[in-house]
Amino acid sequence: MAFRGFMSDKLPSIDTTDTVPDRSIRQWLRDNRIDEIEAVIPDMTGIARGKLIPAHKYSEEIGMRLPEAIFLQTVTGEYPEDQSAVDPADKDIFLKPDLDSFRLVPWTQEPTALVIHDCFYADGSPVEMAPRYVLQKVVDAYREHGWEPVVAPELEFYLIKPNPDADYPLEPPVGRSGRAESGRQSFSIDAVNEFDPLFEDLYDYCEGLDISLETLNHEAGAAQMEVNLLHGDPVAIADQAFLFKRTVRETALRHKMYASFMAKPMEKEPGSAMHIHQSVVSTDTKENVFSDANGEASSLFYAHIGGLQRFLPASLSLLAPNVNSYRRLIRYHAAPINVQWGLDNRTVGLRVPDSGRESRRVENRVPGADANPYLAIAASLACGLLGMQQKLDPSAPVTASAYDMPYELPRSLEQSLQALENSDDLKEMLGTRFVQAWNAVKESEYDTFLQVISSWEREHLLLNV
Image (cartoon, rainbow, N blue to C red; front, top):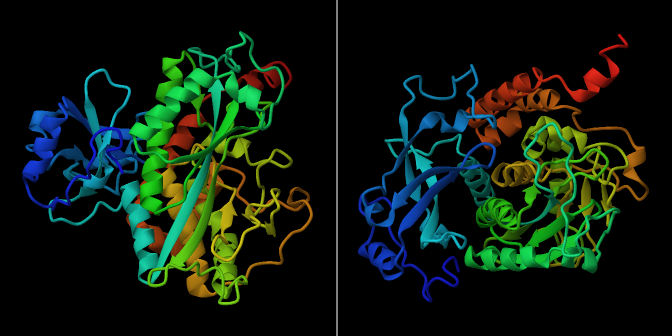
Protein backbone atom coordinates (compact mmCIF):
# COMPACT_ATOMS: atom_id res chain seq x y z
CA MET A 1 0.00 0.00 0.00
CA ALA A 2 1.44 3.34 -1.02
CA PHE A 3 0.37 5.09 2.18
CA ARG A 4 2.13 2.74 4.61
CA GLY A 5 2.98 4.57 7.81
CA PHE A 6 0.98 7.53 6.54
CA MET A 7 -2.66 6.52 6.84
CA SER A 8 -4.44 3.27 7.51
CA ASP A 9 -6.79 3.10 4.52
CA LYS A 10 -6.21 3.25 0.80
CA LEU A 11 -7.15 6.36 -1.08
CA PRO A 12 -10.47 5.83 -2.90
CA SER A 13 -10.42 5.30 -6.65
CA ILE A 14 -10.81 8.65 -8.38
CA ASP A 15 -11.44 9.70 -11.96
CA THR A 16 -8.39 11.81 -12.74
CA THR A 17 -9.93 13.17 -15.93
CA ASP A 18 -11.91 15.64 -13.78
CA THR A 19 -10.50 19.14 -13.62
CA VAL A 20 -10.92 19.15 -9.84
CA PRO A 21 -9.95 16.11 -7.76
CA ASP A 22 -12.40 14.34 -5.51
CA ARG A 23 -12.91 16.05 -2.16
CA SER A 24 -11.45 13.02 -0.42
CA ILE A 25 -7.99 13.91 -1.75
CA ARG A 26 -8.20 17.43 -0.37
CA GLN A 27 -9.59 16.11 2.88
CA TRP A 28 -6.81 13.51 3.09
CA LEU A 29 -4.18 16.20 2.54
CA ARG A 30 -5.73 18.31 5.31
CA ASP A 31 -6.14 15.40 7.72
CA ASN A 32 -2.48 14.44 7.33
CA ARG A 33 -1.33 18.06 7.47
CA ILE A 34 0.51 17.80 4.17
CA ASP A 35 2.23 21.09 3.44
CA GLU A 36 3.70 20.38 0.03
CA ILE A 37 3.39 17.96 -2.87
CA GLU A 38 6.20 16.85 -5.17
CA ALA A 39 4.52 16.35 -8.55
CA VAL A 40 7.07 14.40 -10.58
CA ILE A 41 7.69 12.64 -13.87
CA PRO A 42 10.76 10.57 -14.84
CA ASP A 43 12.69 12.10 -17.73
CA MET A 44 14.79 10.24 -20.32
CA THR A 45 17.68 9.78 -17.90
CA GLY A 46 15.40 8.73 -15.04
CA ILE A 47 15.77 12.03 -13.19
CA ALA A 48 12.71 13.26 -11.30
CA ARG A 49 11.40 16.40 -13.01
CA GLY A 50 8.31 18.35 -12.03
CA LYS A 51 7.05 20.96 -9.63
CA LEU A 52 6.66 21.56 -5.91
CA ILE A 53 3.11 22.57 -5.13
CA PRO A 54 1.56 23.81 -1.87
CA ALA A 55 -0.87 21.13 -0.79
CA HIS A 56 -3.79 23.55 -0.50
CA LYS A 57 -3.36 24.43 -4.18
CA TYR A 58 -3.11 20.90 -5.50
CA SER A 59 -6.74 20.83 -6.61
CA GLU A 60 -6.00 23.82 -8.83
CA GLU A 61 -2.90 22.14 -10.25
CA ILE A 62 -4.46 18.80 -11.20
CA GLY A 63 -4.00 19.95 -14.79
CA MET A 64 -0.38 20.89 -14.15
CA ARG A 65 1.70 21.65 -17.23
CA LEU A 66 5.31 21.31 -18.31
CA PRO A 67 6.99 22.13 -21.62
CA GLU A 68 7.05 19.20 -24.04
CA ALA A 69 10.79 19.69 -24.59
CA ILE A 70 11.45 18.41 -21.04
CA PHE A 71 11.93 15.02 -22.70
CA LEU A 72 14.71 16.37 -24.89
CA GLN A 73 16.81 17.61 -21.98
CA THR A 74 20.14 15.80 -21.81
CA VAL A 75 21.88 14.62 -18.66
CA THR A 76 24.04 17.77 -18.84
CA GLY A 77 20.95 20.00 -18.90
CA GLU A 78 21.37 20.94 -22.55
CA TYR A 79 19.12 20.29 -25.54
CA PRO A 80 20.00 18.63 -28.86
CA GLU A 81 20.06 20.50 -32.14
CA ASP A 82 17.61 17.95 -33.53
CA GLN A 83 14.30 18.85 -31.89
CA SER A 84 12.07 17.42 -34.61
CA ALA A 85 10.41 15.05 -32.10
CA VAL A 86 8.62 17.96 -30.40
CA ASP A 87 6.28 20.68 -31.60
CA PRO A 88 8.36 23.63 -32.92
CA ALA A 89 6.26 25.95 -30.76
CA ASP A 90 7.44 24.09 -27.63
CA LYS A 91 3.88 23.64 -26.40
CA ASP A 92 2.80 22.46 -22.99
CA ILE A 93 1.97 18.93 -22.02
CA PHE A 94 -0.56 18.17 -19.29
CA LEU A 95 0.25 16.04 -16.27
CA LYS A 96 -2.29 13.78 -14.59
CA PRO A 97 -1.53 12.05 -11.29
CA ASP A 98 -1.45 8.32 -10.86
CA LEU A 99 -3.21 8.29 -7.52
CA ASP A 100 -1.87 4.84 -6.67
CA SER A 101 1.60 6.40 -6.64
CA PHE A 102 0.90 8.82 -3.75
CA ARG A 103 3.64 8.39 -1.17
CA LEU A 104 5.12 10.07 1.84
CA VAL A 105 8.50 11.72 1.36
CA PRO A 106 9.99 10.47 4.64
CA TRP A 107 13.10 12.66 4.88
CA THR A 108 11.48 16.10 4.64
CA GLN A 109 11.12 18.30 7.71
CA GLU A 110 7.58 19.33 6.82
CA PRO A 111 4.94 16.72 5.86
CA THR A 112 5.37 16.25 2.11
CA ALA A 113 3.67 13.91 -0.33
CA LEU A 114 4.92 12.70 -3.71
CA VAL A 115 2.86 11.63 -6.69
CA ILE A 116 4.07 10.35 -10.07
CA HIS A 117 2.28 11.76 -13.10
CA ASP A 118 1.52 10.62 -16.63
CA CYS A 119 1.78 13.03 -19.55
CA PHE A 120 -0.85 13.95 -22.13
CA TYR A 121 -1.47 16.45 -24.89
CA ALA A 122 -4.39 18.86 -24.87
CA ASP A 123 -6.49 16.43 -26.92
CA GLY A 124 -6.02 13.69 -24.32
CA SER A 125 -3.54 11.60 -26.32
CA PRO A 126 -0.48 10.30 -24.41
CA VAL A 127 2.98 11.79 -24.83
CA GLU A 128 4.81 8.98 -26.64
CA MET A 129 8.23 10.23 -25.49
CA ALA A 130 7.43 9.82 -21.79
CA PRO A 131 9.42 6.83 -20.44
CA ARG A 132 6.57 5.72 -18.18
CA TYR A 133 4.24 5.61 -21.17
CA VAL A 134 6.77 3.60 -23.20
CA LEU A 135 6.68 0.91 -20.52
CA GLN A 136 2.89 1.07 -20.27
CA LYS A 137 2.69 0.60 -24.03
CA VAL A 138 4.82 -2.54 -23.94
CA VAL A 139 2.79 -3.97 -21.05
CA ASP A 140 -0.41 -3.28 -22.99
CA ALA A 141 1.04 -5.16 -25.97
CA TYR A 142 1.42 -8.22 -23.74
CA ARG A 143 -2.16 -7.85 -22.54
CA GLU A 144 -3.43 -7.90 -26.10
CA HIS A 145 -2.20 -11.51 -26.17
CA GLY A 146 -3.75 -12.36 -22.81
CA TRP A 147 -0.42 -12.16 -20.97
CA GLU A 148 0.86 -10.21 -17.96
CA PRO A 149 4.63 -9.67 -17.66
CA VAL A 150 6.21 -9.89 -14.23
CA VAL A 151 9.61 -8.40 -13.37
CA ALA A 152 12.02 -8.20 -10.43
CA PRO A 153 15.13 -6.00 -10.73
CA GLU A 154 18.37 -6.32 -8.80
CA LEU A 155 20.07 -2.94 -8.37
CA GLU A 156 23.77 -2.56 -7.61
CA PHE A 157 25.34 0.67 -6.39
CA TYR A 158 28.46 2.02 -4.72
CA LEU A 159 28.83 3.97 -1.51
CA ILE A 160 31.56 6.53 -2.06
CA LYS A 161 33.60 8.96 -0.02
CA PRO A 162 32.39 12.53 -0.73
CA ASN A 163 34.26 13.91 -3.69
CA PRO A 164 33.38 17.41 -4.95
CA ASP A 165 36.22 17.39 -7.50
CA ALA A 166 35.14 15.54 -10.66
CA ASP A 167 38.79 15.12 -11.73
CA TYR A 168 39.74 13.23 -8.59
CA PRO A 169 39.40 9.39 -8.52
CA LEU A 170 36.64 7.98 -6.32
CA GLU A 171 37.34 6.16 -3.06
CA PRO A 172 35.30 3.94 -0.72
CA PRO A 173 33.82 5.71 2.32
CA VAL A 174 34.87 5.21 5.92
CA GLY A 175 32.57 2.88 7.86
CA ARG A 176 31.81 2.46 11.57
CA SER A 177 35.27 1.03 12.21
CA GLY A 178 36.89 4.25 11.07
CA ARG A 179 38.50 2.50 8.11
CA ALA A 180 37.65 2.22 4.42
CA GLU A 181 37.50 -1.18 2.72
CA SER A 182 40.88 -2.24 1.40
CA GLY A 183 39.74 -5.40 -0.42
CA ARG A 184 36.69 -6.98 -1.97
CA GLN A 185 34.13 -8.35 0.46
CA SER A 186 31.55 -10.27 -1.58
CA PHE A 187 28.54 -11.24 0.57
CA SER A 188 30.31 -10.19 3.78
CA ILE A 189 27.82 -9.45 6.57
CA ASP A 190 30.42 -7.54 8.55
CA ALA A 191 31.18 -5.33 5.54
CA VAL A 192 27.49 -4.45 5.25
CA ASN A 193 27.33 -3.80 9.00
CA GLU A 194 30.00 -1.14 8.56
CA PHE A 195 27.18 1.03 7.22
CA ASP A 196 24.38 -0.11 9.55
CA PRO A 197 23.18 3.40 10.47
CA LEU A 198 22.77 4.26 6.79
CA PHE A 199 20.89 1.04 5.96
CA GLU A 200 18.60 1.38 8.97
CA ASP A 201 17.49 4.76 7.67
CA LEU A 202 17.27 3.39 4.13
CA TYR A 203 14.90 0.62 5.18
CA ASP A 204 12.74 3.09 7.09
CA TYR A 205 12.61 5.45 4.13
CA CYS A 206 11.78 2.62 1.73
CA GLU A 207 8.95 1.45 3.97
CA GLY A 208 7.50 4.96 3.97
CA LEU A 209 7.78 5.10 0.17
CA ASP A 210 6.24 1.63 -0.25
CA ILE A 211 9.40 0.25 -1.86
CA SER A 212 9.38 -3.50 -1.26
CA LEU A 213 12.96 -4.60 -0.66
CA GLU A 214 13.67 -8.33 -0.59
CA THR A 215 17.38 -8.69 0.19
CA LEU A 216 20.49 -6.58 0.70
CA ASN A 217 24.01 -7.91 0.23
CA HIS A 218 27.56 -6.71 -0.29
CA GLU A 219 28.74 -7.14 -3.86
CA ALA A 220 32.24 -7.71 -5.23
CA GLY A 221 33.39 -4.08 -5.38
CA ALA A 222 34.68 -2.01 -2.47
CA ALA A 223 31.56 -0.67 -0.70
CA GLN A 224 29.42 -1.99 -3.56
CA MET A 225 25.94 -3.13 -2.51
CA GLU A 226 23.02 -4.88 -4.17
CA VAL A 227 19.34 -4.66 -3.34
CA ASN A 228 16.66 -6.93 -4.79
CA LEU A 229 13.13 -5.63 -5.28
CA LEU A 230 10.16 -7.97 -4.97
CA HIS A 231 8.62 -9.14 -8.26
CA GLY A 232 5.44 -7.55 -9.56
CA ASP A 233 3.75 -5.44 -12.22
CA PRO A 234 6.38 -3.79 -14.44
CA VAL A 235 5.09 -0.22 -14.09
CA ALA A 236 4.72 -0.48 -10.32
CA ILE A 237 8.18 -2.05 -10.01
CA ALA A 238 9.72 0.62 -12.27
CA ASP A 239 8.14 3.27 -10.02
CA GLN A 240 9.81 1.63 -7.04
CA ALA A 241 13.19 1.42 -8.77
CA PHE A 242 12.89 5.06 -9.85
CA LEU A 243 12.17 6.14 -6.28
CA PHE A 244 14.72 3.75 -4.77
CA LYS A 245 17.64 5.30 -6.65
CA ARG A 246 16.67 8.73 -5.40
CA THR A 247 16.16 7.39 -1.86
CA VAL A 248 19.60 5.76 -1.71
CA ARG A 249 21.30 8.94 -2.87
CA GLU A 250 19.37 11.03 -0.33
CA THR A 251 20.10 8.58 2.52
CA ALA A 252 23.79 8.48 1.70
CA LEU A 253 24.05 12.28 1.69
CA ARG A 254 22.50 12.37 5.16
CA HIS A 255 25.30 10.06 6.29
CA LYS A 256 27.99 12.18 4.62
CA MET A 257 28.52 9.78 1.72
CA TYR A 258 27.68 9.59 -1.95
CA ALA A 259 25.71 6.75 -3.50
CA SER A 260 26.28 6.15 -7.20
CA PHE A 261 24.48 4.03 -9.78
CA MET A 262 27.09 4.74 -12.46
CA ALA A 263 27.78 1.61 -14.49
CA LYS A 264 31.54 1.86 -13.88
CA PRO A 265 32.47 4.50 -11.29
CA MET A 266 35.91 3.10 -10.39
CA GLU A 267 38.59 1.88 -12.77
CA LYS A 268 39.70 -1.26 -10.94
CA GLU A 269 36.35 -2.26 -9.46
CA PRO A 270 33.45 -4.23 -11.00
CA GLY A 271 30.63 -2.36 -12.69
CA SER A 272 27.11 -2.00 -11.32
CA ALA A 273 24.21 -3.76 -13.02
CA MET A 274 20.44 -3.77 -12.92
CA HIS A 275 19.67 -7.42 -13.61
CA ILE A 276 16.03 -7.88 -14.63
CA HIS A 277 14.24 -11.14 -13.85
CA GLN A 278 11.24 -11.50 -16.13
CA SER A 279 8.45 -13.98 -16.64
CA VAL A 280 4.96 -13.95 -18.14
CA VAL A 281 1.70 -15.21 -16.68
CA SER A 282 -1.67 -15.82 -18.30
CA THR A 283 -4.18 -13.04 -17.65
CA ASP A 284 -6.95 -15.63 -17.21
CA THR A 285 -5.29 -18.45 -15.28
CA LYS A 286 -2.43 -16.49 -13.63
CA GLU A 287 -0.18 -19.45 -14.48
CA ASN A 288 3.36 -19.00 -15.75
CA VAL A 289 3.26 -19.39 -19.55
CA PHE A 290 6.98 -20.22 -19.53
CA SER A 291 6.02 -23.69 -18.24
CA ASP A 292 3.77 -26.22 -19.98
CA ALA A 293 1.17 -28.48 -18.39
CA ASN A 294 3.87 -30.99 -17.46
CA GLY A 295 5.97 -28.36 -15.73
CA GLU A 296 8.61 -28.32 -18.47
CA ALA A 297 9.88 -25.25 -20.30
CA SER A 298 7.30 -24.16 -22.89
CA SER A 299 7.73 -23.06 -26.48
CA LEU A 300 6.85 -19.51 -25.36
CA PHE A 301 9.75 -19.62 -22.91
CA TYR A 302 12.23 -20.51 -25.64
CA ALA A 303 10.70 -17.95 -28.00
CA HIS A 304 11.09 -15.28 -25.29
CA ILE A 305 14.78 -16.11 -25.01
CA GLY A 306 15.06 -16.12 -28.80
CA GLY A 307 13.60 -12.62 -28.90
CA LEU A 308 16.03 -11.37 -26.28
CA GLN A 309 18.91 -12.83 -28.25
CA ARG A 310 17.71 -11.33 -31.53
CA PHE A 311 16.80 -7.83 -30.36
CA LEU A 312 18.90 -7.01 -27.28
CA PRO A 313 21.84 -5.72 -29.35
CA ALA A 314 19.53 -3.23 -31.07
CA SER A 315 18.01 -2.15 -27.76
CA LEU A 316 21.33 -1.79 -25.93
CA SER A 317 21.28 2.01 -25.77
CA LEU A 318 18.27 1.70 -23.46
CA LEU A 319 20.09 -0.79 -21.22
CA ALA A 320 23.50 0.91 -21.45
CA PRO A 321 22.50 4.55 -22.03
CA ASN A 322 25.71 6.42 -21.25
CA VAL A 323 29.27 6.50 -22.56
CA ASN A 324 30.38 5.15 -19.18
CA SER A 325 28.04 2.15 -19.57
CA TYR A 326 30.34 0.44 -22.07
CA ARG A 327 33.26 0.41 -19.63
CA ARG A 328 31.27 -2.19 -17.68
CA LEU A 329 30.54 -4.55 -20.59
CA ILE A 330 34.00 -6.05 -20.92
CA ARG A 331 35.29 -9.61 -20.84
CA TYR A 332 35.95 -11.33 -17.45
CA HIS A 333 34.55 -8.45 -15.37
CA ALA A 334 31.30 -10.03 -14.10
CA ALA A 335 29.31 -8.45 -16.94
CA PRO A 336 28.08 -10.02 -20.18
CA ILE A 337 29.68 -9.39 -23.56
CA ASN A 338 27.12 -11.34 -25.61
CA VAL A 339 23.53 -12.59 -25.65
CA GLN A 340 24.24 -16.25 -25.04
CA TRP A 341 21.98 -18.02 -22.56
CA GLY A 342 22.45 -20.84 -20.08
CA LEU A 343 21.01 -22.62 -17.07
CA ASP A 344 22.33 -21.08 -13.84
CA ASN A 345 25.32 -19.66 -15.72
CA ARG A 346 26.44 -16.19 -14.61
CA THR A 347 28.82 -15.64 -17.52
CA VAL A 348 26.03 -15.34 -20.09
CA GLY A 349 23.88 -12.34 -20.88
CA LEU A 350 20.68 -14.34 -20.33
CA ARG A 351 20.73 -16.55 -17.26
CA VAL A 352 17.93 -18.97 -16.43
CA PRO A 353 18.02 -19.50 -12.65
CA ASP A 354 17.30 -22.91 -11.21
CA SER A 355 13.53 -22.65 -10.78
CA GLY A 356 10.33 -24.67 -10.82
CA ARG A 357 7.17 -24.53 -12.85
CA GLU A 358 5.67 -21.38 -11.30
CA SER A 359 8.92 -19.43 -10.95
CA ARG A 360 10.55 -20.20 -14.32
CA ARG A 361 12.06 -16.96 -15.56
CA VAL A 362 14.88 -15.32 -17.49
CA GLU A 363 17.44 -13.05 -15.84
CA ASN A 364 18.61 -10.38 -18.25
CA ARG A 365 22.12 -9.53 -16.98
CA VAL A 366 22.89 -6.91 -19.64
CA PRO A 367 21.29 -3.71 -18.20
CA GLY A 368 23.45 -1.36 -16.16
CA ALA A 369 22.42 0.28 -12.91
CA ASP A 370 22.66 3.62 -14.72
CA ALA A 371 19.73 2.78 -17.00
CA ASN A 372 16.34 4.45 -16.66
CA PRO A 373 14.33 1.61 -15.03
CA TYR A 374 11.21 2.35 -17.09
CA LEU A 375 13.11 2.14 -20.36
CA ALA A 376 15.35 -0.79 -19.43
CA ILE A 377 12.35 -2.87 -18.35
CA ALA A 378 10.37 -1.77 -21.42
CA ALA A 379 13.21 -2.70 -23.78
CA SER A 380 13.88 -6.05 -22.14
CA LEU A 381 10.19 -7.00 -22.19
CA ALA A 382 9.79 -5.75 -25.77
CA CYS A 383 12.61 -8.00 -26.98
CA GLY A 384 11.04 -11.02 -25.31
CA LEU A 385 7.59 -10.22 -26.66
CA LEU A 386 8.88 -9.87 -30.21
CA GLY A 387 10.37 -13.32 -29.86
CA MET A 388 7.05 -14.74 -28.65
CA GLN A 389 5.17 -13.05 -31.48
CA GLN A 390 7.63 -14.18 -34.13
CA LYS A 391 8.16 -17.65 -32.58
CA LEU A 392 11.92 -17.29 -32.61
CA ASP A 393 14.22 -20.14 -31.63
CA PRO A 394 17.14 -19.52 -29.28
CA SER A 395 20.62 -20.84 -29.74
CA ALA A 396 21.81 -23.86 -27.74
CA PRO A 397 22.43 -23.07 -24.06
CA VAL A 398 26.01 -22.42 -23.00
CA THR A 399 27.40 -24.66 -20.26
CA ALA A 400 30.97 -23.30 -20.15
CA SER A 401 32.18 -19.69 -19.84
CA ALA A 402 30.55 -17.29 -22.28
CA TYR A 403 33.41 -14.86 -21.63
CA ASP A 404 35.49 -16.99 -24.00
CA MET A 405 33.00 -16.43 -26.80
CA PRO A 406 32.94 -13.46 -29.22
CA TYR A 407 31.44 -10.06 -28.44
CA GLU A 408 27.86 -9.78 -29.72
CA LEU A 409 26.83 -6.48 -28.17
CA PRO A 410 27.66 -3.03 -29.58
CA ARG A 411 30.88 -1.68 -28.09
CA SER A 412 29.87 1.98 -27.87
CA LEU A 413 26.87 4.24 -27.42
CA GLU A 414 27.25 5.40 -31.02
CA GLN A 415 26.96 1.84 -32.35
CA SER A 416 23.99 1.13 -30.06
CA LEU A 417 22.04 4.15 -31.24
CA GLN A 418 22.58 3.19 -34.88
CA ALA A 419 21.41 -0.36 -34.17
CA LEU A 420 18.19 0.94 -32.62
CA GLU A 421 17.60 3.29 -35.54
CA ASN A 422 17.90 0.30 -37.90
CA SER A 423 15.42 -1.91 -36.00
CA ASP A 424 11.92 -1.37 -37.39
CA ASP A 425 10.45 -3.97 -35.02
CA LEU A 426 11.73 -2.23 -31.91
CA LYS A 427 10.80 1.21 -33.20
CA GLU A 428 7.23 0.05 -33.72
CA MET A 429 7.07 -1.65 -30.32
CA LEU A 430 8.57 1.26 -28.36
CA GLY A 431 7.18 4.08 -30.51
CA THR A 432 8.79 5.78 -33.48
CA ARG A 433 8.53 9.22 -31.93
CA PHE A 434 10.09 8.03 -28.70
CA VAL A 435 13.04 6.49 -30.56
CA GLN A 436 13.46 9.70 -32.53
CA ALA A 437 13.61 11.75 -29.30
CA TRP A 438 15.81 9.20 -27.50
CA ASN A 439 18.39 9.09 -30.26
CA ALA A 440 18.48 12.89 -30.47
CA VAL A 441 19.16 13.17 -26.73
CA LYS A 442 21.80 10.45 -26.64
CA GLU A 443 23.57 11.59 -29.80
CA SER A 444 23.81 15.07 -28.27
CA GLU A 445 25.30 13.63 -25.06
CA TYR A 446 27.79 11.59 -27.06
CA ASP A 447 28.86 14.65 -29.06
CA THR A 448 29.36 16.59 -25.82
CA PHE A 449 31.46 13.76 -24.37
CA LEU A 450 33.74 13.75 -27.42
CA GLN A 451 34.70 17.34 -26.61
CA VAL A 452 36.25 16.26 -23.29
CA ILE A 453 39.99 15.47 -23.25
CA SER A 454 40.66 12.66 -20.79
CA SER A 455 43.61 12.19 -18.42
CA TRP A 456 44.53 9.02 -20.37
CA GLU A 457 45.02 11.09 -23.51
CA ARG A 458 47.18 13.61 -21.68
CA GLU A 459 49.16 10.83 -20.00
CA HIS A 460 49.94 8.72 -23.06
CA LEU A 461 49.65 11.03 -26.05
CA LEU A 462 50.80 14.47 -24.93
CA LEU A 463 54.56 13.81 -25.29
CA ASN A 464 54.58 10.56 -27.25
CA VAL A 465 52.79 11.18 -30.55
